[in-house]
Image 1 (cartoon, rainbow, N blue to C red):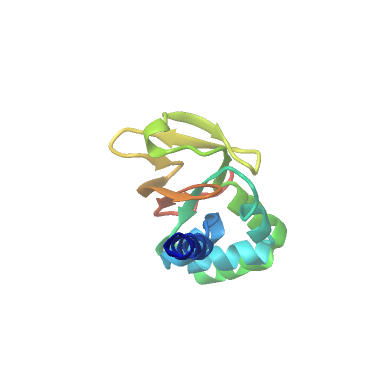
Image 2: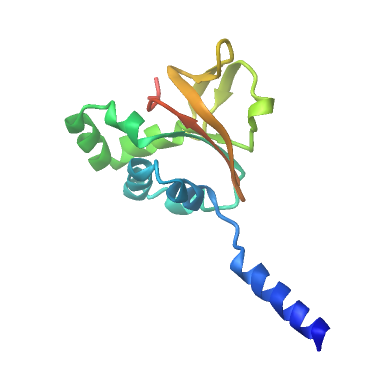
Amino acid sequence: MKKILIAAALAASTLAVQAKDIVDTAVAAGSFKTLATALQAAGLVDTLKGKGPFTVFAPTDEAFAKIPKADLDALLKDKAKLTAVLTYHVVPGKVMAKDVKAGMVKTVQGGSLTIGTKGGVTVDNAKVVKTDIVADNGVIHVIDTVVLPK
């Protein structure tokens, strides 16, 4: 009887622990509301909930707040441009902070980000402020500025 109860408890706890994908992880963090809204507007939620793995350089709400409101509103209404901007923040594969090297890295958008490692890690003109937020389909590195494709 005791073995059955233990097995039932383990099964229940396994069901309760569900892995979180990139989107769920970002939403749970609470500082990516604008990013979540943008992903929804661009139709990219399902993509980033997909198998991956992805490395996402995720701008915080404060990063999006640096963009003038009229410009941000216009971007959120232009699905093609918004998709290009958001996919520019995504690199295929799972790259942890310890594996970051200076240089150019190809994005899902097709352009290349410039990664710097002197005095902290930078992605184009953005500073990486938090690293290695692990999701079941990749990793998030938090940046302080929205980066734009060239």
